[in-house]
Length: 355
Length: 268
Image (cartoon, rainbow over all chains, first blue to last red; front, top):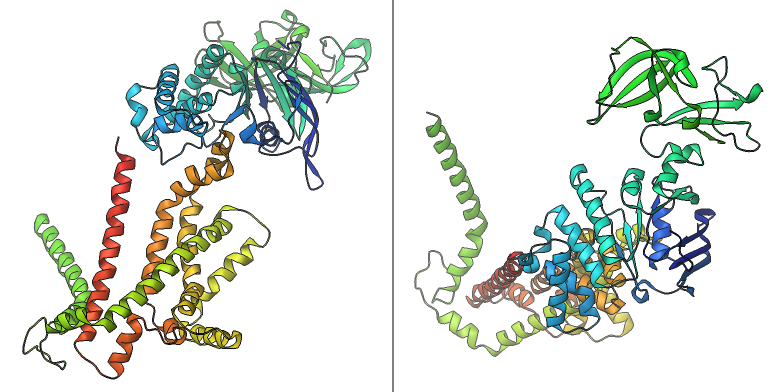
């Protein structure tokens, strides 16, 4: 996905608040037309990073380059970029149409042209045309979202930034809007840089994801890479439920763990690995008829089950350790609560991380 | 049975409300009645009704001078107070800066200072600085007390202002001045408007500060007081009524304007 010449380049970008580095030496290239999502827990520095990219804050050190041009000190109103705010920041004293036309009015375009463009954008975002003169505060949450996006698109930015705009919206609508946003991305072919604390949200929309932790970018990759080969325990635990077993490398290339006295068969072991964690996604764990049916097997008690719709999740307790096992609803399983069960996984389906 | 109890409760509530309103308005009504007498002295019940004193008052050059002084002071105070208080309110409620919490306390102190003492203190200062007393010094004196009040009034509006609105406008290409004109001022307008009403009415009705600081000029409240102390004529209630009606018209007009504005904003 990374093109030859990135639209946005970060070189050792750092932001200090007193002695504390909110953003700590980040290098990153974002490709033209990419949907790039920065994800991290609150306080990880992602908002600070985005504000620097949008021109609302300036880095303490490092360079931000837009198509190779140094833009560290270029203020937000001079940058060909635009941001959709968490609060959306719609102008409450203006109608839907006036909100969308705002950047065009500032640019001094004539009213007829402005209106035509606004209606065109409303059409793109599936806002009814009669909303043009509707009070923006009377719109629903989803409609406001679309107005905010239309207003940003009216600016015709080269890059669109999103500061968790969907965080205040209820689950079902959020899922719809996530997909819509990805559709809009395809239609407009613009570069989108999105930040969120939800890796699930990031997965749905992004071409690439950067995971942030304590001001540092810990992993950058496609949603698939982030999900199936996280490089740290932190990244692995960031999406959905995950089983993490502390292990160390023992003899005969087996992993030592308190759970299995005989040792566990590892996936590919990284060079120089000694201690770390074995990460197994719930869908790779399965119930076994007998211990030999998978590379690794553990015996535990079926403690609880949760229906997730298309899938069913089980809680299995092996000693004091809780395991999460998931299977599709249509797969047969006759286990009942408090039964003794054997769970297992194949060595290649687990991931070994060093921290 | 229940409907009777409800009806009884309703009538009691109505009676109580009416009683409260009557008590509040009796003084005002008495002043209006007192202004409608044709006799020279204050008598109750009124023996002879007439509009003589209204005519005399409205034709009096002295009264016109009083009204014009009071209006001039109130208008000057309104303009200056709202301008200062607007920026003061931004510092009060919008921006986070070192010393803000101290500023928030200090700015409110003049409100709690007894006005008559404040007036005297200002008089001493004007004398020390050698400033001749006139309606201009009164404007200054009013500002000392009114700016904090208006700052507080506007701050309430500023607290509900989302700073992201300004950032969004700036991000969409607006200059700082355009942000102020297109976003900050219009969004804060209701607060600025009620702030100016407060400023005007507080200055219009102010007596203790004017008493010390107007010098040779006289405002309506000062004149009324002087006439009450010595030389009462029914011109006093006439002027009092005019003053009250003026305030009512201003308030109702302001209310109507704000409602009309809301309606245009809310319309579809």
